[in-house]
Image (cartoon, rainbow, N blue to C red; front, side, top):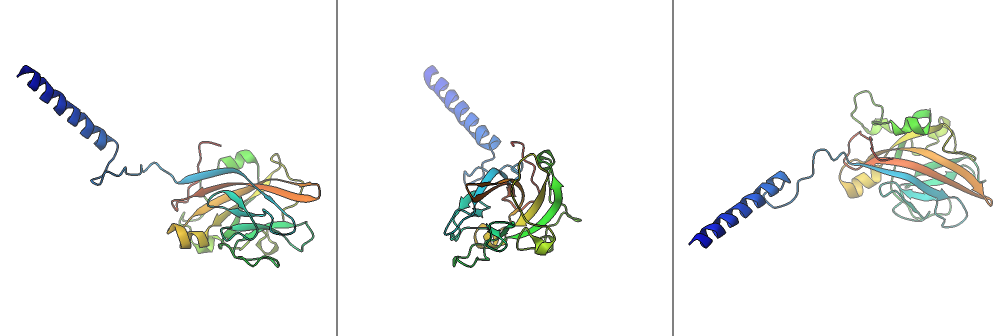
Length: 221
C-alpha cells in the first residue's frame, strides 16, 4: 500500500509539472506553440551579390529570400540593369519589368529613396522607414527602380563599404500579393561595386520585415 501511495504521488507530481510546462511555453488547446509577440519579423541579409553580363547571368535578387537568382528567374523581385547596355550607370529595377533579352517576368517591387547618403554605422541604426504617420501605403513607394526617373542617380564603380551611400526602402508588392498574404517591406543599401576582369559586380545589404511591420531593428549585424 505504501508503494502504491508513493507511485500515485509521483505520477500526480509528474502530470502537474508537465501541465505547468505546457502553460509556460504558451501552448494553445491544439498543442501549437503560440508565436511570441516579441518576434519582430526582421530578417537581415548582410550581402547579396549580383553580376552583370551578357546572357542569363546572376544579376537578379529574390529580396524575400535574400538570394541571387538568374536574369530569367520567375522568382526575382529586382534585377541589376544598366541604362543603355554599355556596362555603366546601373540601377535596381522591379522584377516584373523585363529587359530586351529576358522574356520571364518576376515580381513587382516598388522603391523609394529615404536617405541620399549614409555611412554603414548610420544605416545600422535605422529602425523604421520614415513616414509622417508610420502607416505605410502605396504612396510611400514612388518608383519602379532606384533611379527614380533621374532624381536619385545611378550606381557605378568603384564603391566600397567605407563610402557614404544612398538608402532605399522597398515594398515587395508582387510577392506580398501572390505568396505572403501580407505586405512585406524592406530597406537596402548598396555595399560595394567593382569591375573585375571587365565584369561589373555589386552587392547590397538588405533588411526585410516579414510580418508587415514598419520596423527594422536587428540586433545581430
